[in-house]
Image 1 (cartoon, one colour):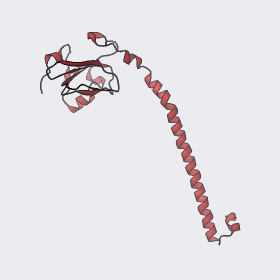
Image 2 (cartoon, helix red, strand yellow):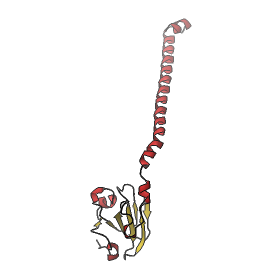
Image 3 (tube, helix red, strand yellow):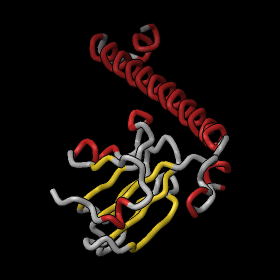
Length: 169
């Protein structure tokens, strides 16, 4: 595999080159990466679904010319047509302003979002549970009525169908 141009490697401390499918799929998706920059050859798109921390991204063409730089927001897809190299550089909210990268107001404002999402979705989940319980009660009542009608029809057929024999059961 080709070595990245010097402009791609510029300013990066011991980057990892993602060659395997697993490395490319996970990216910076876990703390096990050691928070080292990752270089993706032949890459013009990426997702930011499960980063454990914020990261800066840089797209380069095959000759190493910078095409696009930005700070990745969570749960997004990013595309850069014509890109050949992608560099993901870990940035926490504390060091996001270093080296000219945009400071991360996004990650600081994301605190507590999980609790808000839970508070918004919990009533819906409770209502869905109550709906299931009500539908179960309705189904049981329907089955009870069907059983009673079947028993009445059986009794009527066994005792010549007189009203008194049906009422007596």
